[in-house]
Image 1: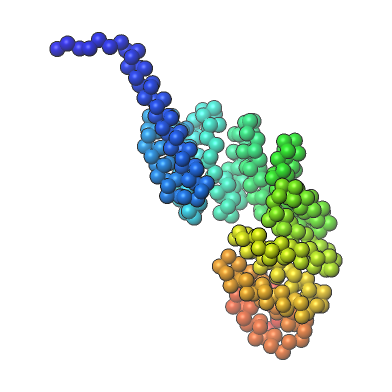
Image 2 (image 1 turned 135 degrees about the horizontal axis):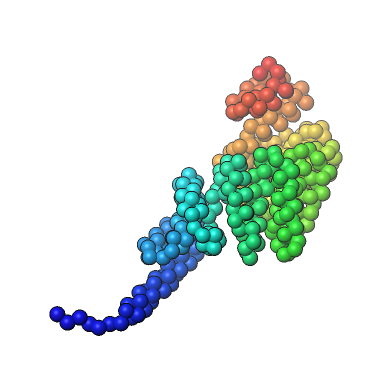
Amino acid sequence: MQFLEVPFCNFYEVFRGALISNEHQVAALETIGISYLRQMKFEDARKNFLAAMRAATALPLWQRLKIENYLAEVSYFEGDVDKALEVYKRTTAEASKLPREEQLLILNNNLGQTHFQKGDYKKAIEQLEKDLALYHDIEDRRFTAKMRYALAESYRFEKMYAEAANNFNALVDYARETGDLEHLFRGYNGMGNIFNDQEKWQEAAAYYKRAVDVSLRLGMEEHAVTCIANLGVIIANAGDLKEAIEHFTSALAYVEGGRAKSGLMQQLHCRIHLELGEAYRQNRQFKEAGEQLLEAEQLAESALTREFLFWIKLVQLKLASDMGDKNLQKLAKKAKSLADTKDKLAKLKEIVPSI
């Protein structure tokens, strides 16, 4: 039998050419999958990422882990957060065994942010601190800014205010240096939230005002109106009910102007009516308070805003008590049926001890 005499280098060139072709195919499938993901076409995105996985079997591990992370992102946006977490945990563990230069090529593992979104703030802090230590010197500083924001908020929710402030201030410094107005807004708003949590109204108001200025410069109207509503709460807590009512009324005019259609704005719409009703009640404008609370109650029938229903009933109960309503006990029983925690029940008993 006679064998073909083909130089070894030709086999290498053929293999190398196939590998390069494969890399291009994987890159194309990834790009298409990302495009579908941004369009919220999750099934199409998944099909392309799965095809990329099949084509990537001969590629380095870090590239395959990237594709798996994209699949986890699809699961996350479909609402299967637990499945996304499972994938992110596994890919994080596998990536940790790679050389650092290869780990730095994987920029789409959202384990820390997913812990944060799920409300597991201790785990979010642990992971995000590790991620910042790993990625601290990469060129894409906006990438690490997103991590720092989630880390700062996680510390705030854990009431670790010094750590939260350190991270929000670092975010502000980065944003001023680079001109990243979106993260400048997040930094100012975050600092306002920290002071608000600690009932330091004057400091909170100062930061919220800065956040409003930045959001308006960005054209981020929904962010601006949220800050204006927050300012109303702060000013009411500080005792200036007239100015608070002006802020709530201004925010309400925007929300009811027809431009705010997102789920977040639907929640804010309900919340503003509630806050405005409480401000009118405290200002002893009982008729106006009742009207605003009725509007809030009607909006709270939506699944997106049902969480506000107890708080609306609570303020309605306070209003009834202020007005000497004879049906106070009956109203209290309705509110009690919505009190699903001991803290909520305690707030009702402050108004009607015998409930």
